[in-house]
Image 1 (cartoon, rainbow, N blue to C red):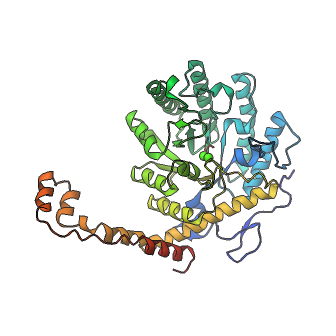
Image 2 (image 1 turned 45 degrees about the horizontal axis):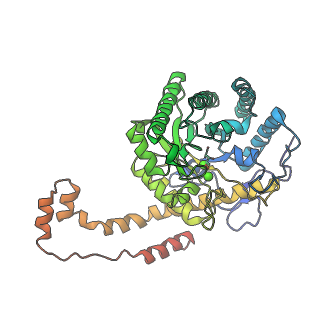
Length: 438
Ligand code: XLS
Ligand code: CA
Ligand code: CA
């Protein structure tokens, strides 16, 4: 049966098309900077927002109208799988992502939960045999169930910690079974409300122990996915341990885990941390841990995690600039961890939303590639940092400088020759590229 009867396969029609069910900029086979758009962008559909969520929020029940609404339990889970593959095919998604609890109902015991998972995973595997859509990543939801009220890998309760370990073990098995390219750890409740009852040192040591166990088990079963940690500064806890890229990197360094992980960076989490998305990507890129992206953006007027489909072309351009400079995302991709607004409750809205997000990133890719081709930022940086190419600057960069040599130079009292940063001019140039005039 069809769940999206009003929608056919979405085709590329170009920027002048007024067909709402067509791509205006995303043309999967178009070559940009030596690769097709599909290869560059590696888009993924997030199962939880697109097929599991129904628009429920803190103030009211779900609003979404879906063809699977009348079902429950395993029947509901099966219908969602069927609908998801119809959606992937129609939108042309190369990847999807899920949490364990998104795809199958939880049972009363771990045994029952795992049995439900096995049934649905087998069904997904069957669909994947004839589908082009692959699994970008899966993860374990260790934050929704009441047992995780004090955390999972940082819980104050060892029994809960053990349950989290069992859930990760199953998640790694599922990932292997479905050929996941990555496995994500998002520390939903890994953080704390107050130090008055928190042993921060023990909690962080325990979290690192759990990650090490996951590395060991993936090796044991021959699951070669890239492990990803997804930073987030707040929500649900006040102080999340993986606050941002830099904090997560420090954690990985401290516990000797850096070689086993990259980062899954989310645009909305970046802004919640007080950063731009491109800041987070740059921190990851220069440290060799740029792994994958959740492209959903926030709303600058709202201080919470709104998970909107990305439409900000400045962010998509500067994000794709970082991705191109990173020589791509490797096994990673661009996941839409995004939900349609509660008022956009019709099935077609899922298509409009993904089309707008995919177009925003396709446009960003093209603009960034053109700017790199023209060496726009490269020239700006070369000029701005020219003083490090010769004289005292060269001595500093080559590592030969000491405070003696610096003082010797400074005592010559030469003019500083600071140059303008030209920020307004640079912004205007960026506008010209985005508007397609350069
Ligand atoms: C929540 C997170 C979550 C992760 C996966 O804010 O973004 O959805 O991406 O657990
Ligand atoms: Ca989010
Ligand atoms: Ca996310």
